[in-house]
Length: 133
Image (cartoon, rainbow, N blue to C red; front, side):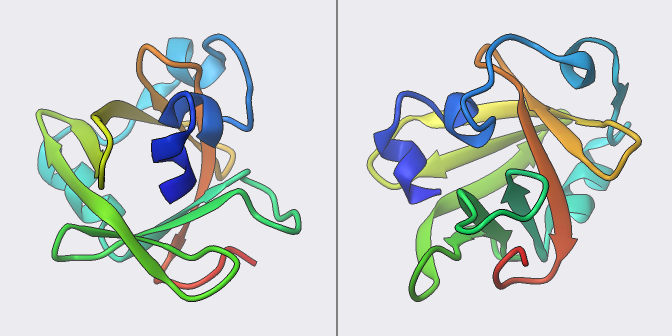
């Protein structure tokens, strides 16, 4: 999601330009309950936006276990910054941009909501790196 660093905000971009908070951000069940769970949940996983496959995918961010964030875009994988978890929040620090921090909710339907002051980001999360096909 290196393009996000250049966009108006991570939230708007990941949400596929949705507006306002949706059910996940206002009434979803928080996931996970404890910080170690969120870190464990995200590491070695790829966040796929939009949550259903379309060609091309908007963003495909792999959460490397060493804290590196890798975007699987149209070409080769590219390191776009770092990710970290503290106090049940995940923070994305994109190279050359400000950090973005989110709480994460499990929507119970195979999608997850990343919530902040920006519009809700709805994503699917898959194990491992690579594209979100």
